[in-house]
Each structure stands twice: as C-alpha cells, then as structure tokens.
Length: 120
Image (cartoon, rainbow, N blue to C red; front, side):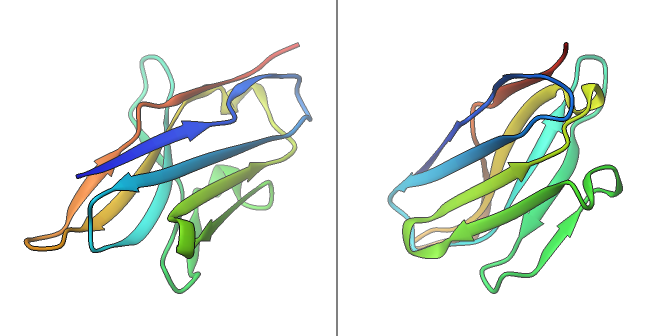
C-alpha cells in the first residue's frame, strides 16, 4: 500500500509564498498522475493542480500564473509552489496519487492534508 505525507503548510500573509511537498512511500509498482486538491470549510474539494509522469500539467483557473506543480519521479514526490497567495487560497490541501500496485487495478490514494492559511 502507498502512504502519502504532505508537508509545508502554514500561516502566511497575503502576497507571500509557500511550498508544499508530498512524498509517497510503501509498496507499489508505480505512480502515474499526482495532484493537489484543496477544501475550505463549507466548500467542495477542488482540484488545484495535477501532473502526469511525463510532466504535463493542468491548473485550476484561480491559481494559474501563481502556483506551479512539479514532481521528482525517482522519489515519487510532488511539489506545489504557491506564490502571490490570497486569503481565498486558505484551505486544507490534499495530495493525491494515482497508484498502480504490483498486482491489480490502479487506485487513488490521499494524504492526510496540510493546512494553508493566508491572513494578515
């Protein structure tokens, strides 16, 4: 099984930056796409950014030009560089991975989440 552990969240002032990391560990054959989702209180969980093994990316319109997703395939780690943060970016950010196990069908795995708070 795979475990995803996020880190890098915290409190930052508007206009500031944070870099989130998510490391996958455990027993699996490979990880295909990885992504970041976020959920604010009372709101639906939404896709922030996703990246394939080949490096293709997509972003939510609200973060385009401000956030950058990247990954290190060798270490099964995905990052989210967040710049020009706004109060509306405040949410719990969750790492997601599409996991291909050694034997069986692929499945999605989720991290425990890391809190990002943007406030003065």
